[in-house]
Image (cartoon, rainbow, N blue to C red; front, side, top):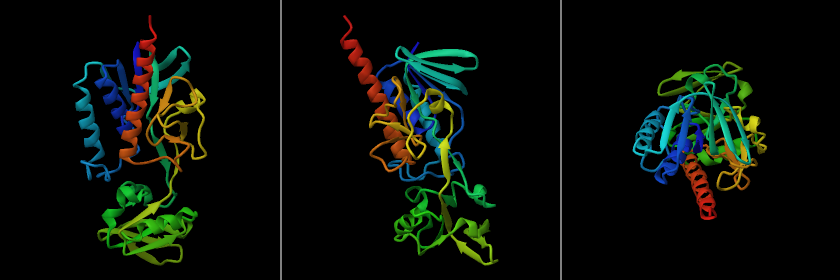
Length: 282
Protein backbone atom coordinates (compact mmCIF):
# COMPACT_ATOMS: atom_id res chain seq x y z
CA UNK A 1 0.00 0.00 0.00
CA UNK A 2 1.47 3.29 -1.12
CA UNK A 3 0.50 6.74 0.01
CA UNK A 4 0.83 8.03 -3.56
CA UNK A 5 1.23 6.50 -7.00
CA UNK A 6 2.46 8.75 -9.79
CA UNK A 7 1.93 7.77 -13.42
CA UNK A 8 4.38 9.56 -15.69
CA UNK A 9 8.15 10.00 -15.54
CA UNK A 10 8.49 13.45 -17.08
CA UNK A 11 9.28 16.66 -15.16
CA UNK A 12 5.87 16.88 -13.44
CA UNK A 13 5.96 13.28 -12.22
CA UNK A 14 9.61 13.39 -11.17
CA UNK A 15 9.11 16.60 -9.18
CA UNK A 16 6.00 15.20 -7.49
CA UNK A 17 8.01 12.11 -6.49
CA UNK A 18 10.91 14.22 -5.22
CA UNK A 19 8.63 16.37 -3.06
CA UNK A 20 6.85 13.33 -1.63
CA UNK A 21 10.16 11.57 -1.05
CA UNK A 22 11.56 14.47 0.90
CA UNK A 23 8.54 14.21 3.20
CA UNK A 24 9.11 10.44 3.61
CA UNK A 25 5.83 9.44 1.98
CA UNK A 26 5.60 5.96 0.47
CA UNK A 27 5.57 6.73 -3.22
CA UNK A 28 5.64 4.75 -6.47
CA UNK A 29 6.53 6.36 -9.78
CA UNK A 30 5.50 4.45 -12.90
CA UNK A 31 7.20 5.48 -16.15
CA UNK A 32 6.08 4.16 -19.55
CA UNK A 33 9.11 5.63 -21.32
CA UNK A 34 6.93 7.72 -23.66
CA UNK A 35 7.49 11.49 -23.60
CA UNK A 36 6.01 14.41 -25.49
CA UNK A 37 9.44 15.98 -25.95
CA UNK A 38 11.16 12.75 -27.01
CA UNK A 39 12.31 14.35 -30.29
CA UNK A 40 13.73 17.47 -28.63
CA UNK A 41 17.53 17.71 -28.48
CA UNK A 42 17.71 20.79 -26.28
CA UNK A 43 15.00 22.20 -24.02
CA UNK A 44 15.05 25.85 -23.00
CA UNK A 45 13.60 28.43 -20.65
CA UNK A 46 14.33 26.41 -17.50
CA UNK A 47 16.42 28.29 -14.95
CA UNK A 48 19.73 26.58 -14.29
CA UNK A 49 19.15 24.12 -17.14
CA UNK A 50 18.68 26.27 -20.22
CA UNK A 51 19.59 24.13 -23.22
CA UNK A 52 19.48 20.84 -21.30
CA UNK A 53 18.64 17.65 -23.19
CA UNK A 54 15.29 16.41 -21.84
CA UNK A 55 16.69 12.88 -21.52
CA UNK A 56 19.51 14.24 -19.33
CA UNK A 57 17.04 16.10 -17.16
CA UNK A 58 15.02 12.92 -16.63
CA UNK A 59 18.18 10.94 -15.91
CA UNK A 60 19.33 13.44 -13.29
CA UNK A 61 15.87 13.51 -11.77
CA UNK A 62 15.84 9.76 -11.37
CA UNK A 63 19.31 9.82 -9.81
CA UNK A 64 18.09 12.34 -7.25
CA UNK A 65 15.09 10.17 -6.37
CA UNK A 66 17.44 7.30 -5.52
CA UNK A 67 18.48 9.20 -2.38
CA UNK A 68 14.99 8.79 -0.88
CA UNK A 69 14.19 5.37 0.51
CA UNK A 70 10.42 5.82 0.42
CA UNK A 71 10.35 6.41 -3.35
CA UNK A 72 10.20 3.47 -5.74
CA UNK A 73 10.53 3.87 -9.52
CA UNK A 74 9.37 1.26 -12.04
CA UNK A 75 9.61 1.26 -15.83
CA UNK A 76 6.16 -0.07 -16.55
CA UNK A 77 3.02 0.48 -18.60
CA UNK A 78 -0.20 1.00 -16.66
CA UNK A 79 -3.19 -0.88 -18.06
CA UNK A 80 -5.95 0.61 -15.93
CA UNK A 81 -6.84 2.89 -13.04
CA UNK A 82 -9.79 3.26 -10.68
CA UNK A 83 -10.65 5.47 -7.73
CA UNK A 84 -13.17 5.52 -4.91
CA UNK A 85 -13.47 7.46 -1.64
CA UNK A 86 -11.25 4.89 0.10
CA UNK A 87 -8.29 5.03 -2.30
CA UNK A 88 -7.04 4.34 -5.81
CA UNK A 89 -6.12 1.19 -7.71
CA UNK A 90 -3.60 0.89 -10.55
CA UNK A 91 -3.10 -2.19 -12.72
CA UNK A 92 0.45 -2.94 -13.88
CA UNK A 93 1.38 -6.19 -15.67
CA UNK A 94 -1.54 -8.04 -14.10
CA UNK A 95 -0.77 -6.74 -10.62
CA UNK A 96 -3.15 -4.47 -8.73
CA UNK A 97 -1.44 -1.72 -6.77
CA UNK A 98 -3.19 0.42 -4.18
CA UNK A 99 -2.56 3.89 -2.85
CA UNK A 100 -4.23 6.68 -0.95
CA UNK A 101 -3.72 9.14 -3.82
CA UNK A 102 -2.99 9.12 -7.54
CA UNK A 103 -1.08 11.73 -9.53
CA UNK A 104 -1.54 11.63 -13.30
CA UNK A 105 1.43 13.19 -15.10
CA UNK A 106 1.11 11.40 -18.43
CA UNK A 107 1.25 14.49 -20.63
CA UNK A 108 -0.22 15.23 -24.02
CA UNK A 109 0.38 13.82 -27.49
CA UNK A 110 0.48 16.03 -30.58
CA UNK A 111 -1.21 15.37 -33.90
CA UNK A 112 0.82 17.41 -36.39
CA UNK A 113 -0.37 19.03 -39.62
CA UNK A 114 -0.14 16.42 -42.41
CA UNK A 115 2.63 18.24 -44.25
CA UNK A 116 5.52 16.00 -45.41
CA UNK A 117 8.64 16.87 -43.48
CA UNK A 118 6.97 18.45 -40.44
CA UNK A 119 7.17 15.32 -38.29
CA UNK A 120 10.83 14.76 -39.18
CA UNK A 121 11.78 18.22 -37.87
CA UNK A 122 9.32 18.30 -34.95
CA UNK A 123 10.88 19.42 -31.69
CA UNK A 124 13.85 21.13 -33.29
CA UNK A 125 13.36 23.34 -36.36
CA UNK A 126 9.58 22.88 -36.19
CA UNK A 127 8.03 23.75 -32.84
CA UNK A 128 4.92 25.16 -31.22
CA UNK A 129 6.27 27.15 -28.26
CA UNK A 130 8.16 30.42 -28.91
CA UNK A 131 9.31 30.54 -25.28
CA UNK A 132 11.05 27.19 -25.69
CA UNK A 133 12.42 27.50 -29.22
CA UNK A 134 12.10 31.06 -30.52
CA UNK A 135 15.45 32.50 -29.44
CA UNK A 136 17.35 29.87 -31.43
CA UNK A 137 16.02 31.48 -34.63
CA UNK A 138 17.00 35.02 -33.61
CA UNK A 139 17.77 37.48 -36.39
CA UNK A 140 16.52 35.17 -39.14
CA UNK A 141 13.12 34.68 -40.82
CA UNK A 142 10.64 32.19 -39.38
CA UNK A 143 7.33 30.85 -40.64
CA UNK A 144 4.08 30.45 -38.75
CA UNK A 145 2.03 27.67 -40.35
CA UNK A 146 -1.27 28.53 -38.78
CA UNK A 147 -4.56 29.68 -40.22
CA UNK A 148 -6.23 30.34 -36.84
CA UNK A 149 -6.60 33.70 -35.03
CA UNK A 150 -3.73 32.58 -32.78
CA UNK A 151 -1.34 33.21 -35.68
CA UNK A 152 -1.48 36.98 -35.18
CA UNK A 153 -0.58 36.62 -31.50
CA UNK A 154 2.28 34.29 -32.31
CA UNK A 155 3.54 36.69 -34.96
CA UNK A 156 3.55 39.51 -32.43
CA UNK A 157 5.43 37.41 -29.89
CA UNK A 158 8.11 36.47 -32.43
CA UNK A 159 8.47 39.93 -33.98
CA UNK A 160 11.29 41.10 -31.62
CA UNK A 161 13.13 37.79 -32.12
CA UNK A 162 13.03 37.04 -35.85
CA UNK A 163 14.05 39.22 -38.77
CA UNK A 164 10.72 38.44 -40.42
CA UNK A 165 7.66 36.40 -39.47
CA UNK A 166 5.80 34.85 -42.40
CA UNK A 167 2.27 33.66 -41.65
CA UNK A 168 1.23 30.90 -44.04
CA UNK A 169 -1.91 28.79 -44.31
CA UNK A 170 -0.79 25.19 -43.69
CA UNK A 171 -2.89 24.10 -46.66
CA UNK A 172 -0.61 26.13 -48.93
CA UNK A 173 2.55 24.33 -47.81
CA UNK A 174 3.11 21.04 -49.65
CA UNK A 175 6.37 19.97 -48.01
CA UNK A 176 9.16 20.95 -45.60
CA UNK A 177 12.79 20.07 -46.35
CA UNK A 178 16.23 20.74 -44.93
CA UNK A 179 17.96 23.85 -46.15
CA UNK A 180 21.28 25.42 -45.21
CA UNK A 181 20.99 25.93 -41.43
CA UNK A 182 17.21 25.94 -41.65
CA UNK A 183 14.16 24.79 -43.58
CA UNK A 184 12.88 25.14 -47.13
CA UNK A 185 9.12 25.39 -47.49
CA UNK A 186 7.61 24.43 -50.84
CA UNK A 187 4.25 26.05 -51.55
CA UNK A 188 1.43 24.72 -53.70
CA UNK A 189 2.27 27.20 -56.49
CA UNK A 190 5.85 25.92 -56.69
CA UNK A 191 7.43 28.83 -54.81
CA UNK A 192 10.03 27.96 -52.18
CA UNK A 193 10.79 29.95 -49.02
CA UNK A 194 13.87 29.47 -46.82
CA UNK A 195 13.43 30.10 -43.10
CA UNK A 196 15.37 29.34 -39.92
CA UNK A 197 12.43 27.47 -38.43
CA UNK A 198 8.67 27.10 -38.39
CA UNK A 199 5.95 27.13 -35.79
CA UNK A 200 2.82 25.02 -36.06
CA UNK A 201 -0.28 24.52 -33.94
CA UNK A 202 -0.67 20.78 -33.38
CA UNK A 203 -3.91 19.25 -32.16
CA UNK A 204 -3.09 17.99 -28.68
CA UNK A 205 -4.82 15.11 -26.91
CA UNK A 206 -4.38 13.11 -23.74
CA UNK A 207 -1.48 10.70 -24.22
CA UNK A 208 -3.00 8.11 -21.87
CA UNK A 209 -6.61 6.92 -21.45
CA UNK A 210 -6.73 7.37 -17.68
CA UNK A 211 -8.62 10.68 -17.57
CA UNK A 212 -11.41 9.06 -19.56
CA UNK A 213 -11.32 5.87 -17.46
CA UNK A 214 -11.75 7.92 -14.30
CA UNK A 215 -14.40 10.22 -15.79
CA UNK A 216 -12.42 13.38 -15.02
CA UNK A 217 -13.81 16.78 -15.99
CA UNK A 218 -11.89 18.28 -18.91
CA UNK A 219 -11.47 21.78 -20.30
CA UNK A 220 -12.39 22.82 -23.84
CA UNK A 221 -8.70 22.40 -24.65
CA UNK A 222 -8.92 18.70 -23.79
CA UNK A 223 -6.75 19.13 -20.70
CA UNK A 224 -7.96 17.80 -17.36
CA UNK A 225 -9.66 20.46 -15.25
CA UNK A 226 -7.76 20.97 -11.99
CA UNK A 227 -7.66 23.47 -9.16
CA UNK A 228 -4.43 25.41 -8.45
CA UNK A 229 -3.08 22.41 -6.50
CA UNK A 230 -3.83 19.84 -9.19
CA UNK A 231 -6.98 18.37 -7.65
CA UNK A 232 -9.29 16.89 -10.28
CA UNK A 233 -13.04 16.39 -10.19
CA UNK A 234 -12.54 12.90 -8.72
CA UNK A 235 -11.58 12.60 -5.09
CA UNK A 236 -8.02 11.36 -4.44
CA UNK A 237 -6.92 11.96 -8.04
CA UNK A 238 -4.52 14.75 -9.00
CA UNK A 239 -3.17 15.78 -12.40
CA UNK A 240 -0.05 17.78 -13.21
CA UNK A 241 1.93 18.98 -16.19
CA UNK A 242 0.66 19.88 -19.65
CA UNK A 243 -2.16 17.32 -19.42
CA UNK A 244 -3.88 19.51 -16.81
CA UNK A 245 -5.26 23.05 -16.86
CA UNK A 246 -6.67 25.19 -14.03
CA UNK A 247 -9.59 27.46 -14.87
CA UNK A 248 -7.45 30.60 -14.56
CA UNK A 249 -5.06 29.43 -17.32
CA UNK A 250 -5.93 30.21 -20.96
CA UNK A 251 -4.71 26.74 -21.95
CA UNK A 252 -2.31 23.97 -20.95
CA UNK A 253 1.13 25.30 -19.99
CA UNK A 254 3.59 23.34 -22.12
CA UNK A 255 6.86 24.31 -20.44
CA UNK A 256 9.24 22.40 -18.21
CA UNK A 257 9.11 25.02 -15.49
CA UNK A 258 5.31 24.96 -15.37
CA UNK A 259 5.27 21.15 -15.28
CA UNK A 260 7.79 21.06 -12.44
CA UNK A 261 5.79 23.63 -10.49
CA UNK A 262 2.54 21.73 -11.02
CA UNK A 263 4.10 18.46 -9.88
CA UNK A 264 5.40 20.08 -6.72
CA UNK A 265 2.04 21.69 -5.89
CA UNK A 266 0.17 18.40 -6.33
CA UNK A 267 2.63 16.66 -4.02
CA UNK A 268 2.35 19.44 -1.44
CA UNK A 269 -1.44 19.10 -1.46
CA UNK A 270 -1.16 15.34 -0.91
CA UNK A 271 1.29 15.78 1.97
CA UNK A 272 -0.93 18.38 3.62
CA UNK A 273 -4.00 16.16 3.25
CA UNK A 274 -2.18 13.18 4.73
CA UNK A 275 -0.93 15.35 7.59
CA UNK A 276 -4.43 16.62 8.32
CA UNK A 277 -5.73 13.06 8.52
CA UNK A 278 -2.91 12.21 10.94
CA UNK A 279 -3.80 15.16 13.16
CA UNK A 280 -7.37 13.90 13.55
CA UNK A 281 -6.34 10.32 14.34
CA UNK A 282 -6.97 9.52 18.02
